[in-house]
Image (cartoon, rainbow, N blue to C red):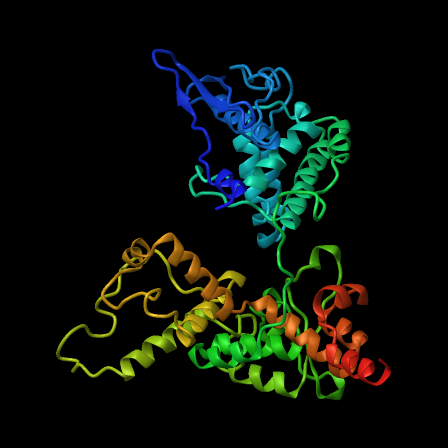
Length: 455
């Protein structure tokens, strides 16, 4: 194990109470000199002391574990920011109320991680005092993660960190527009440059690739007909999963010229910008949708997880070999008020999980890593070593695909057959640049053929 690897797994110094006092402190060690220094944090278990602990650790990590100046960040006083204007916590709470009312659910929930981190590290800080240096400390915490939180927070990737920093600026821009803080606060935060590839210790994410065809075909028999329909529709149309899960009969125009159905989602990514989105369903896609049009209201979701669960239970009952006079009869062992019930439509996450379950059934991990029939999920996780968990994670990554890969697959196939402009129109992009750079894989076969002849 290298020196850097050993350094990365050292535990973070703990937050603790000074014996005989009501004060909290943390003891840091200088990585170069070995010198140790106590940093007093404030009243033990107070929100202010918890916040300063996270800031001290972030500063220490940003200095490559060299000791920060004792006065680099004076502890916030016991009086919250009433006399200095609203605190960061006040801004966060009011922004969250506004976001839930004005953003789509998925967009609002994307703010949750960074709002939680803001409250954890700077909740009691006056919002007017949250400047570029505080933002950099917060960003450093994103880079290194925090294994001591509940649940533990893994280090974030560089692109995701840049997205979250932009969200922080949006929060303070919103606060300025509502006259909670001066506009200069947002303007100062805008001076912090994003993390750049190769110039930060934050890890990089892999680009999304098209779903491997053999994984899709292998998992297909283990999907419900509802999930299988969503997969087929994505491959045939290039639509986003969030657009298809809410498809209703009322959203379909079946009388459009050319024999193509037009699907206009009621909710989609750019709806709040007033941009229309039309998805075109050809004969193959129409055959996928047609069986779901019967026996439901025109404003009900066509593809329902509740219906999938009912069909699964009916199939289990059909395969039952125990006589009805023995054992449980259908419905006798159900809870009166179950904690989780099948919903009328899928979410993007539930759709993704359904695909993952099908992939796991199609290509189960080798016996040492697989869950045994005689153990629960918790017993299974407790049995696996850290090395086996890492091996299981790698196995799943290699044998799973997710819904957004299907959109990339469709984009690549459409571009290969009909060109970049057709792929742009099918995916609903305003610019072909996005289709070219992000979604449609270039056809390396054409380049190989050209170079075989020319070079």
